[in-house]
Image (tube, rainbow, N blue to C red; front, side):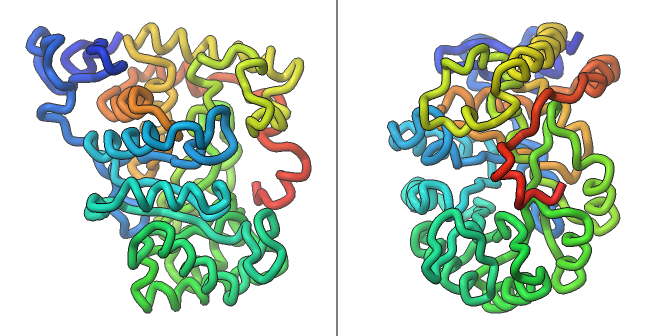
Length: 363
């Protein structure tokens, strides 16, 4: 059991809050949990970031309720900054464009200290439009100018290729990104869902700061081939969907919870028998959470954080209470037994993406 001296969880009206590193018995219900607490930081290449970030996609794209309460989304972003989050992630395809615009509004007057990450490559600005891969140098030039304008900034701290473009050699793509770094428009470059060979070829042209890949207790395919390459080259890992698209929180018990336009309705893992089989994984995470006196989401994030000091997950949410819950995982240290129980969980049933969406995943 985790001791209250390291992780004391309680409810104080606005959701699950956490007071950390206070002696047992000294934390009262009326105290604000962030008093005296500073989020730990990790390195993504040369970027220094709080080790729990914020994925903004669901505020404007893909998930039930997206785009219905921008005011709450802005409050969630501000609360994340208050609690030590520095890495905030978006992409031009989210919306498309509306998620970057939302972040631009939310970060007005609060840009300093934020490691702002966005992505290009799934919108062809030469005529194909959203959903058409294009990582050509000319398209990158158009994309970055649009993102800078929507985000209301003069530089992007971390600029990712959203998916590897099979039609454009990675050397050409990274060469164009290197020019943007030299011009000061981009601070560091990243790749998303890239395989080992692509990562090595890209890094040989210009240092890659981070690779963003799906990684969680139910998606661990990168451990065999990709993670060793990142460690060898000194590249940080940014796991997206670290809570299994909400499944690992234990709050998803039926597909009927999803709106008709929710992306998860297309995922094999959320379909039919796969959904029912995967509930056992969520239930075991919940059992470990009960043992740790934490929530399932916090336990899933704490397991990821235990995988190395070069890992910075970006759990997505549009709610203040969930931001508070997720960032509190920074203070949770799981026991060796708890980590072993989680690491021993079976693989999830079903692919993460439908067949058409898998074609650009280098896994």
